[in-house]
Length: 431
Image (cartoon, rainbow, N blue to C red):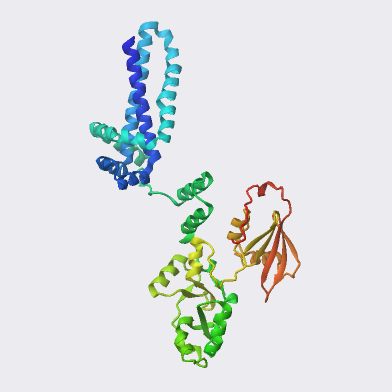
């Protein structure tokens, strides 16, 4: 009887070992394994880490085979002992008792511990699993071939390799890290910007044509210098006859020689640099690469008809990652300003995506990308100052118009206690 109890104890300990080893492998993942390799603290295990990185499925197969053998052996041993001592009638007790013992001590407890101490368990278990994988390789190989054959019959692609990490997994990790305090809000904003960077189209971040500051080719250097001073820009596009015909970019540093010579009467067309043109549907990352290749900081955006849709600068692109950048010349008004807990002053040009993030409430439209465009869609025409519209649980009031554009609006919650607003965030002065 003592030998039976000792045997059961050993088998349950082995069951706990294999369960914990399985969990430590899945909890660590390839990223953790590569980190352990690069740190160099466990150089003697580098080949074992590489084995797990290359074929974690083999290690998991070893765990599953061994764990099932151990659990079945434990149940068989317990049943044999009870049958010999108490007879066949006592077998009905073996199943629930062994189930409780295996589930608690062979599964739940070791797996929970392995989730918390995954690195320590992995360092202990990985070398043992690799030895076992070698010893039972014929069995493991046979089982893998059987599974592959069954998958073929059932038209299941069981050989597809999973990607290292998916975009959704990264976003969830960032979200969890922010909620736990491991990441600050500004750090999460930058990571989100990097993740979304490759999906952003240049027309989403460009300065629209209506907001472009430009010079005519016949303007004098004196007029250009005045515009540079008034606007605080270091580069200004220059057009001939129409803003749709951009012929070059005037750089403030290219005017210095003429300024030293006190030559302010020359036309700006003589000082221009060649512009680059990109379609409005191109990705922001591709525009950045073009700018780096051409060693320039500004690009002209054209629409599908060849007309100028706007421009984008290197600063505009970088702001998608690091957030708003303002220098000593910038006099930009924040897109969202908090008036009180339920009221916000909002620029009409703000994108619906940025507005949704700022107010913690969903703003969307199939026909518009900005808040001003959304209001135009709802009005069915061009609204007047003071006109109000209801959108979901928000009251939107038009505050200012400029040249057929909605420039400023006020958003007020219709029902501040609405459950849809439970996740509303504190809005900074600059969004």
